[in-house]
Image (tube, one colour):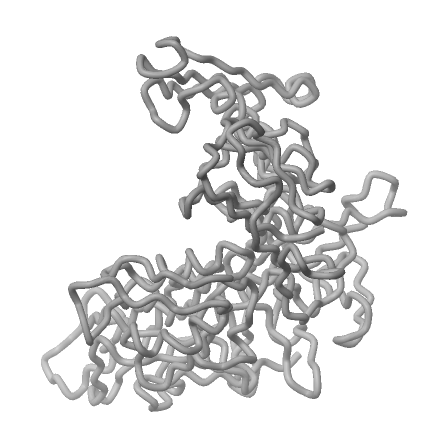
Length: 507
């Protein structure tokens, strides 16, 4: 089995011939978390020179897989001791280059307005999409390095529409903080090795292929292609499980000066896995002042929603964290049009395992998990000198992941890639379709009496955002009492002059 042509460049210069591949490691992570790399260079002629801040890239089989900044340079020798009597004869000089990938820019670029550093950045008039805000304004309000592209409509897509305006957050926040706000309607973002910024809906992250212990080896683009792997293991981690939440709240200023209390238990989980408790004492916290708020909080901790209706795969702590790890090689990566289709951290990858089934392999164990971390190493060389590129993947969902990722993963197990842009909807929209982003005022008008309101369409549970007089409300301020019927129940009665505004993804 032949190896893969490997090219490592430093500041645009190919240094592959001097690299010790067996000691080189490249790591990439999902959610635009900066990955790290380590490159060891042999400098026998003592003529090489390296400095921090330069660019380093990795290409495998002609495919650019990694790009980043050198942040640390170490000079050393391969051996702990050497004869340096004749300096020119010393051939053990070594350079250790370490750094981070391009996603480090997310934390090293700051929102600023060069025309006015001391006032709020002007609002963007709506309707405007999140993708348009990035494509049109990031170059204006961030110091984007030369060669990086944030303006591509192909890679920076529209997911959410701001109906009236987009209001920039405070100057001085990092790019990551701004993007987290823009991405909260269901998008993911990262900078790829080719310096292209990506901002795409989570449903578009489904990988073109996955893994199976009974692979079909179908071509890319046909069904769900699966390929083999080695060293695979599926892990169910219950170390963060909570199936009994005990919550206190209240204040001397509310609830008649009484402490309020709620407890939420998931009996099936306790029976199957023992009791795992957590407590929160929120007395005096202005977020948990009344009974309804602590009740909702306890339900969210255990079940992942305020209704207390447990959904398998919902973002509640009653669910164990699910992880899969496996290894594959560049020679086993499928191709499309003659080019390898490598997996990228953040992609949701189908995993189908017949050996792990519960009916002797008839029905495969099937799960879709995002690739959290990808590590590239080079364990050996082939007879021709090309390296074998090894990929070690860690797949899984964690409690820290955003709610929209959980909502996507707990959907249908069999998926197809989607590339449609989500549409917008208001009260006057006719047949908006599944996935449309609703933005409008609910009915009836506030009257100082009712606390139950409606939007004219059903919505996906967990996606509703409620604003009162322009202020986003905490989840404990309302419940999604009947999502399929468009119903919302507030835990308070709004004043007749209060203005309500709702954003939600329609079902």
